[in-house]
Length: 533
Image 1 (cartoon, rainbow, N blue to C red):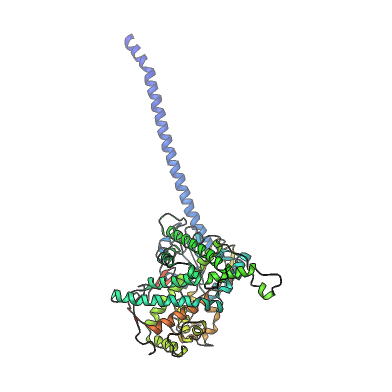
Image 2: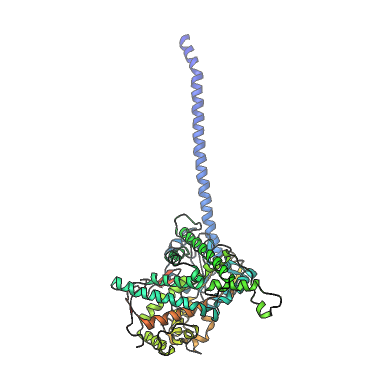
C-alpha cells in the first residue's frame, strides 16, 4: 500500500466508525421499541386474560350450588345479547331450572328466586334487600326517589301516601277516569272505521292508560298537549328499562332517550305540584291524587297541639315540588306498563270468550238497575262481582309483572345452603306462584269462577303475589282493581270488539311487562242497544 493510499484509508476511519456507531444505535433503538411494544402487548394480553379468569372464577364462586350455567359462555358480557331481545320461554326455563338460579351480565351477578316461599321471603327482607327495579332505573328515576329509600325515610313517604288510595279518595278520582274511558272508547270505534278493519290495539291501550293515570294523578293541572306528549313518548322510558342494560348511558341510545323523557315528565309534574299547592292554599277542593297529598301537607302544617291523637297520626311533613314530581312519576311508572298489559290481555281474553262477555253484560244491566247511563261510583263498581273476578283471573293468568328486581344490601343467607353475595341483583318471580297447580286447578286455563268466596284460590292468599307483599307492597292495588273493573264493565256494556286471532296471539312478548306478541288485533264497534244482551 502506498503512503497516499494509506493516508486516504486513515482519513476514512472516523467516518466509518461514526456510521457504525449510528447503525448500532439505530439497531438498538429499533430492538428496544420492538421489545417494548411486545412487552406492552404482552402486558395487555396478560391483564385481559387475568380479568377473564377472574370473571369466570368470581362467577363460579358466587354461583355456588344453585342452578345456572357452569361457566359464562360469553366472558364478561354474559347473556347480554340475549337480554336485548328477551324471550318469555327463556325466562320460564330459568324459573323451571330450580328454586334458585343465576346469571351474570357485565358486572352484575343476578340471583332468581322461582318459588312462592323464596319470593315472599325476599319481599319481606328489607334488612337484606332493597328495590332496584333494574340497574338503569336509579339513573332514570333519580337516586333520591322514595322507592329507593330505606327505613324512616321510606316510612315517612309511605305514611303520607297511604291515604291517597283509600275508598273515599278513589271515589273522587273516578269521574275523571270515566271521562277518559268515554273519550278513548269512541276513538277506538273511529279508528276501526277509518282503518276499515282490525288493527293492533296494544299501542292504543297504552295511550288510554297513560291518559287515565295522568288525569288521576294530576287532574286538570296537566294540559291536553302535555298528556299527548307524555303518552306519545312514554314507551321510550319503558324501552330504556330493560332487565339488563349497558352500564353507561350513551348518547342516542334507548337509555339516553328514556332519561330525556323522564326528566321532561318530572319537570311537568313539578309545575303541576306548585299549581296544586296554590289551589289547596286558596281553599280548593280535592280533585286528584296531587291535591289529596298537598291537602294532607296543608292540614298537617296548620294542625295545633289541641288536635286529638286520631288527627295527629295522619300528620306528615312538607314535601318539595321535586319530591312530589319524583313520587308522582313512580306512580305513573308503576301503573302505566302494568295496567296497559292487563288492559290488552283483558280485551283479547274477553273477545275470545263470548260466554264471559255475556256474563259481564248481564251483570252490568243488573247492578245498574236497567239504567245503562248511570255514571260510575265506588258503590257501583264494587257491586260488579263477576267483572271483578274476570279482572282478577286475568291478572293471575297473565300477570303483567313477572319479576321484581331487588339488590342485596349485604350478604343474604336466603337458604340453609346458599348465601346471596352483597351487591347481587335478587329477583323474586311471581309467575310460578300464580300458576301453581296445587292451588289453581288447571292453572293455564282462564277460569274467573275460581275466585268465588271460600274457593281454594281465594283462600291461598300467600300465592296472590300480583302486587307483591311486605313493606314495598303496591300502594295502588285497590285503585288498579277498581279502574280495570270499571273500564271493562263499561266497555262490555256499550261496545263490541272482535279479535283477529293469529299464530302469535297467545305468544307472550316481554316489554317491561308482558303483551300478546301480535299486539292484540281488534276491531271495535258501538252497540246499537246496550239494554239487550
